[in-house]
Length: 154
Image: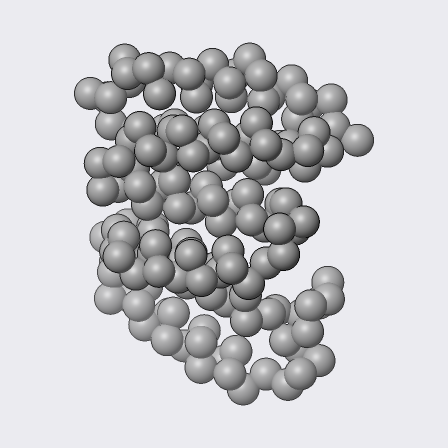
């Protein structure tokens, strides 16, 4: 929306509010909001406003805060990382990373939200890159491979 300063102000307010929360509110429960979620959402915000340096740093940190077996959150962080790569012109790298992620996820974690986020990566790719092999291959995987698996779901 082009409101970078407002986004940065909101991020500062959110961080300050999080720092005032008690342990019960920052615990890893359905009702808690953890530090790793805050770091991830910071990275997502930096991605959205186009500050790829800050985005990549925050997302890298967030990914390291999740266990390798926490597939969904790590997959969503990876999609934010892919969007950040697209923003700096690293379309082939973003496509290959997204493809690798989708192919490496256990079927039960290949959910609608993961496929939807992969579609967001594809939608962010500039038109001039559409005909490249990495983009075509990712698009084929998302439309023909990943989507039916997600639809089958648990």
